Structure formats: C-alpha cells, structure tokens
Amino acid sequence: MKNLKSIYVFPLLALLFVACSNDDNAPVPVIEEEVITTLTATLVPNGSGTTITLQSRDLDGKDGPNAPVIDVSGNLAANTTYTGSFEILNETESPAEDITEEIKEKDEEHQFFFQATNTIASFTYSDADGNGNPIGLSFTLTTGSAGSGTITITLRHEPNKTANGVKDGDITNAGGETDIQASFSVTVQ
Image 1 (tube, rainbow, N blue to C red):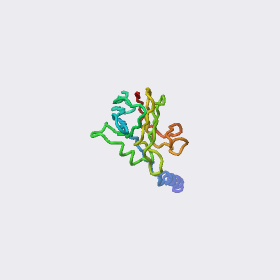
Image 2: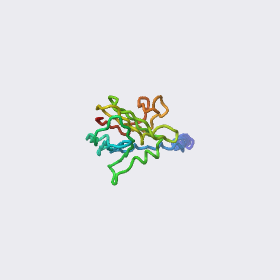
Image 3: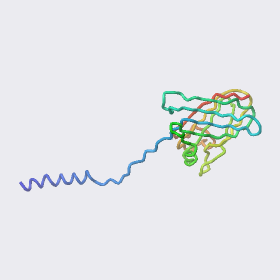
Image 4: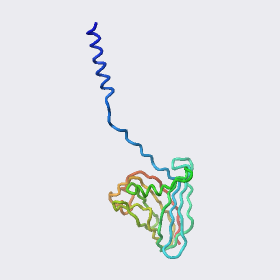
C-alpha cells in the first residue's frame, strides 16, 4: 500500500513543479493610443495678409457616432507662403490635454502628412526629430494660382520614416497607425 501511494505522489509532485515554474517573461505593456479630439492648423502668411485656421473638432472621438466639425476661417491668398503650426488637443479631459507636447516629446514616433488636390498648395517640413527625419509640427504651405480643392492632414504614429518617399511627405509607404486625419475644403483666391 505504501509503494502504491508513492507511485501516485511522485508524479503528482512532478506535475506541481512543472505547473508552478517561475516564468520570468514580463507582460508586454499596453501602450494606449492618444485620444485626439481637436486638430487646429494655424497658417500665418509671410508678409501681409490674414491668418487662416483649419480646425477639425470631434468631441466624441474618432470612434464616436458624430462626425467631426470642420472649420476653415477664410480663403488662402494665391501665390503666398504661409508658416504653419499645430495645436493638438484631447478635449475629453478637463482641462483639455495638450497632445502637441506629447508629439514633441515622442517626435521620432510621429509624422504629419499633407496632401492637396488640384495643385492648390505644396508643403515643406520645417522641423525634424533627433534622427533628422521630418515631424511636421511646423511647416510651410505655399499656394499656387487661384482655385479650390481639399487639403488633407494626417498624423501617423510610428511611421517608417526611412521608407521610400516618406521623408518627402509621401504617405504611401509610411505605415504606422493614423492618430487623426482631417480634410478641409479650401479656396485659393
């Protein structure tokens, strides 16, 4: 009887040791995506003219049922260069959280992309991250002749900044996740 108990106890103990092994694999931390409700681009003309703002405000977040409210404060002047900058906010918090600061701190993980239809504008990056790759928090926008079209602004998280064309602002090979994207109907006159 004693031998019979030993036959059952030893395999049970061995199973217990295997089941309780110390696994030093730390859990992978979950990095939550920034909540961005408001993107405001401010365009200041070099020389004289009117400052223009492009704003997308989506207070229920990008997954909420309501579409963002898009506002363009005026028309762009033809054949003009504007100095551009962004304010990015999370207005679900009170006071609103300034996501712009987080993008500055994690500049190697972010890049803005600009697209314009009908050749109404071209864009140039005015800032770079620690590796010399573009960010886009500051930029220049240069308008062409009079016309109308759409300007689309996209902020990507963890894009492949070394992929073909990405340094020049081509979003095609950028990869990464879109933090926010907004399209603005604009008139150049």
